[in-house]
Image (cartoon, rainbow, N blue to C red; front, side):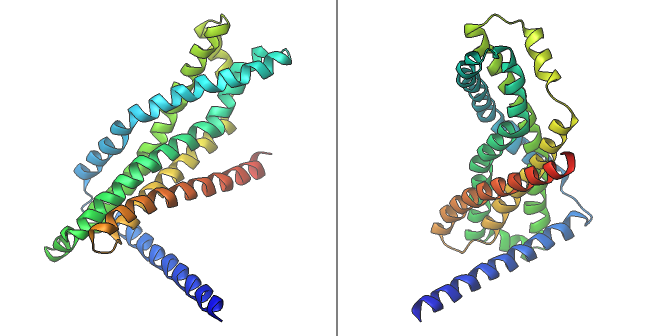
Length: 259
């Protein structure tokens, strides 16, 4: 009996959470198309989200490309296919590894930052003060951040992909002598439209999920200093799960459309 009560309570909380997120999402879409868009705040968020995350994404992507080449080379050499290293690296990075790793990095840095920032504003009643003064906190705080993440995460992913290929080039030159032009010619020749477009589209959804989760967790956090840390931590975990779920769905849809 007690287990049934706990199970019922868990389902009730989950359904309430889904309902709250649906309402929050509808508020976002209503305010996107409302007049008076906060362009200055949007540009500031693009700078905070994009430029301040570029160093971390760049270093991680470079190391990722370098490590992939070092890991792939012994296996391909064993089969006499070391000439396929640029091809293998470019396809794996552009299609899957680059977008997902960049999104996970952004989830850890950006979602937690947004969740903590909006959570602290909720605790200190700054959001309530904006509502009382007649301002629109959803349009100013939520819409700008979600749109900024939806715009900047794809750019970060593309830059990360290029940096990963550079890392692969340096790693390949540790053991083999290959020209810069030949290496990137092989990388580009291995790719086509069906590699670029799905990767770009899913990074837009990655960015939207990161921004939405961070804003929702922070904006709806309970009042109290402890809730700020909970909002930041919950934003990272939930955004990471959404990234993997979106990636799984994107792979299935891509396979149905192109294969």
